[in-house]
Image (tube, rainbow, N blue to C red; front, side):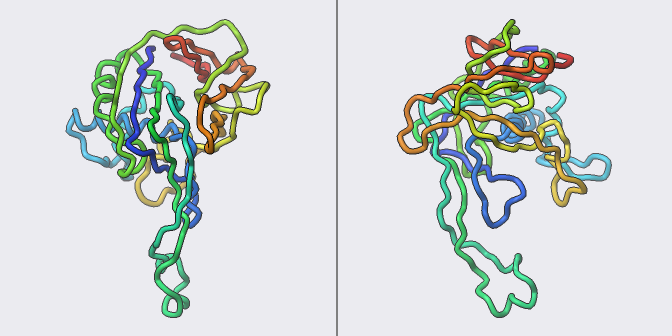
Length: 262
């Protein structure tokens, strides 16, 4: 297994709204793992001439699922800047969400807070842990990443590197990369938030249309940043459950992933 390290420059930021929200549309502070996989899959599917969606077992899925077997794990952090999740008012069509008896009486429009995350003059550093037989094609795909999140989140790839990884014989870590909270035994500072993401390996997260079941949810610890003053981001100081997780050194940076068959 090797690491694919990708530096992406935001043109302004990204839009990824929290799952199971309709009216509230609160933004995520960091792009979820499934979003990062989707960004990488765009290049892969473009190289191979794949359509945006595919049918599998009579169900429609995003073509993102084609690269799931090549990705062991993924994480990210913001570098050279901070970020600011924000909600501003937008004029939206509300009539589809009104009960039938109210549609004639109330305005079809509503003022609604719409979430986005601004990253001014900042970059996102993404680390994909990739199975070696996939590394060549996914390295090429990484250069074709054009957005993070929705189509408005236009981004430019600045640097792509394939690097070796090595396990660290320690159970303590200082890191800015997000990780699953069930891998953490103890937290030594307050430089974190708890965020719930969908499990990127659950195929239901990529189902198009109405899904028959809710994708598996996983709680992550993400690095807290100062949305007012920005500046240097304090890393999370953690004690890791090394029986179920492993710490990897990736070109001088430490990340945590689950312990399994590499």
